[in-house]
Length: 325
Image (cartoon, rainbow, N blue to C red; front, side, top):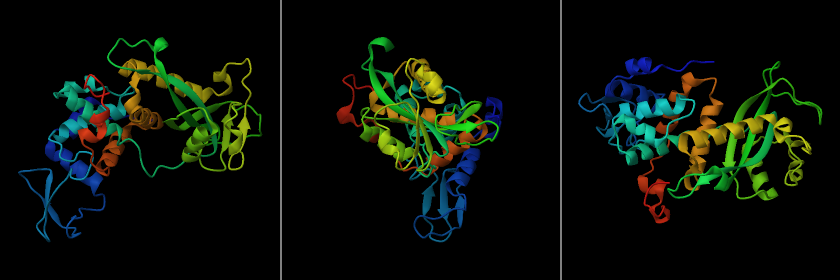
């Protein structure tokens, strides 16, 4: 397991704007600077403004954060780096209430966290393959500012798919249909909100996240047989047995998800739930590689298009209290 930086090591590596700018520049332009005006590759960083580069061919000045998730942000790069570090490497993540310890307002902390969450999905990520458990669950969600009671709350339907890894082989290893998968571990994870338990919704989730030809281990739900043409379907009848015994890895993930949502956020809100699911998936898939999580999220943020507060909140559909959900 790769160890992430300690807080002391992080502070020593990124003590100021200049060091942060050098690191971010390497993530945004891994093959060297490219001028957006003339495509020139020669530039000089302005000493008075660490985020600004001037093209030596056409003279255009380009901000390091322009066109990224940090576009037009007035926050210091050190604040972005600290937020990315704690959100990517802390086992439970960080809520906006906790991020305001960085010396920003709650609204700023909330927007900062939302932009980083939306940068935790690699648009070019590979589909799951090999042996994959697929199941659905309902997670309680918050509505308004009233005291949150999970037992009395509404439910968001979430589909999950998790790779099953054979511990001895160190990779997915399909077995004959009906055979027990013992001595296994979990690999990569995918989660998404689905509209309902219909075959249409579940098939769309599976096809969008699992490579054709993979072995699907599911329960006996009627929505799965339609996938048998493109996948090797290995259904399990739950019966009187606990579902967590039949589908252990998906249910372990669902249990961790529910505890995280309740413990860190005191219940998720329906409006932005996909971003929170992406955050959970990001950290779960890198739980053995914490040392690269910070670099990964900053690299994705450097190549993600800008979003404003209005884009994210969509004020026309905001909560009655006017607070971000």
